[in-house]
Image (spheres, rainbow, N blue to C red):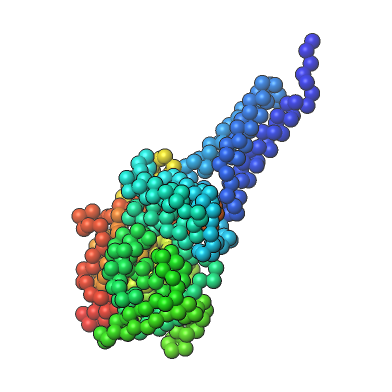
Length: 496
């Protein structure tokens, strides 16, 4: 009579349980803490499945418990492997509360380090971006080849130079959301007078005697944009920060800036390295001449213009928070009590965020339904398409507004702020006044951000492509009334 070997079945059960638990534990570790290599997940899944097979071979335990163990291992394996090879945020830093700083842009990397960063960036672009599913455009292949040639021909490259090579790959996608992000650099410095020029309404027209339009052509490959107005905004921002200047290939000293003032005069100033200061010092300099008015820095607020029967909601960020919800309710409560007939949403200084702010705003409008745009989501080798939908509007029946709605836009109206505008205008619920927003209506978004392994540079990559509701209206949101963005509110007040 054969006897079973004692202990082995229990050992296999323990191994399967341990591998499964470790696999599940590493998923949130990757999302919220640090990168977990895909090979480790594959190895753990293989070990778990092997242990389950050995449990079956030993016929250990009740049949039902073995079946459940096999099902559980299958679910864990599918979940883990999907996360590694399909989920666009795997190894991204998008949900991590703490991300190590990028290396100083002047820091040098060895050719091996530079090559590793470039290969990693290329692989993440290929794996994540909706435009690159099963297809590599010739322009991207050429940019990648030029990057490798630059590494081969150089003894060493600075972090800024690696950033330039990666950005040149990203820029061929014509996607304003995809590219190098400089927000994670320590001790960034800004031109000390830049805040004053902005508050005065001065316009940067030339650097070192070269017109901004010429620099836009020369530096286009180092910027990610969809519209010329957004390219200009990005270029102007980069030109007044030391890190932006390094990415563009400028030095931070000996630069000559030429501004055109609001009354048409030309002002020229020269900037030395010590003319670039920290953000805190920049704010002190600006506020010394332009003290902030009470409530002026609030990201969401509203103002009533009784003579024009107008309420203006100013939204500088798309954040669907309790503060936003309360501000909306307070405004529409006052609109109802005063009998206001016009409401405007001012998105001229809004760079985006959470697109659900539009859904919350819709709940106050007198419409039973509205259309929601279609979306294509890149999931590794797969594309998940969500077609356009008709949404039932869950209105706040006590505060429904049936008057006229307007939305004020500028080139700085970007991402979710542009989508907010599209929801209102393409559904026929509002009139747009101002300038065209900074990105196109059928472009990309929903960014996953990756940290390059050696330079620490952040690379943002879109995961979704949006489809415009009104396809016949074109790719950009052209205002119904085109006026300079700074004059949009006054134009509306004059009309009313």
